[in-house]
Image (cartoon, rainbow, N blue to C red; front, side):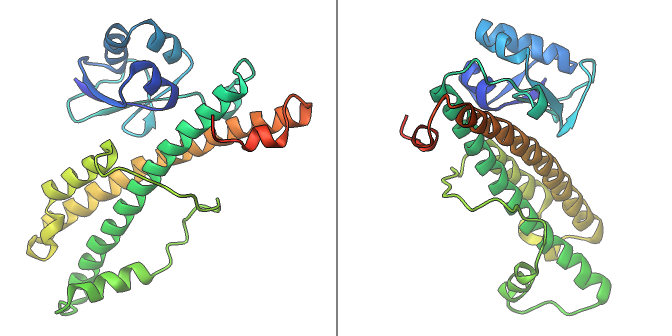
Length: 240
């Protein structure tokens, strides 16, 4: 068994964004998914990128109940959107941007909580006294410049609280005791930091992949404009 995450066209073909699918390897999980979701999903899957726990993998990679298999559209150079209509290209771009919004939101949540947990580690190692007002420490942590943000312009987002990544992060925080950091022993605190760090790394890797995919489909829109097959108003029209 493994947790299956589906993005963009794979999600549309399957009709779900997340499911638990039987299989002892990545290949078996995908075979089960093809039978479960049908020919449309199988056709989309043929051109997709598959990751295991945030990293590229081979079909024979072993999976367990704790593993996550992500199916994403092809990246940059391997993407070919020339056969799609303008409406389909825009729809694909919008779907990717929605996924990136959610992934970036989950990443920011994870980074903030990881910073707070690491600050507790720092406090213990330095021997500093606990702040009476917990919000004082939180304000100081978030006032520090991370320096790893995106240079893309900000966009209005509407990420739902029950998005799979947000739900996963909340469950991870409950399991690792994030809500009571100062009651954790050093080993438990180290485990909490490790799990948050692993989640943040995996989500950041997914975010980079989505950025590459958004860039690829944006390049297709630019290509069409330069070729004269569409105009600026059509490219910018998000109403369809």
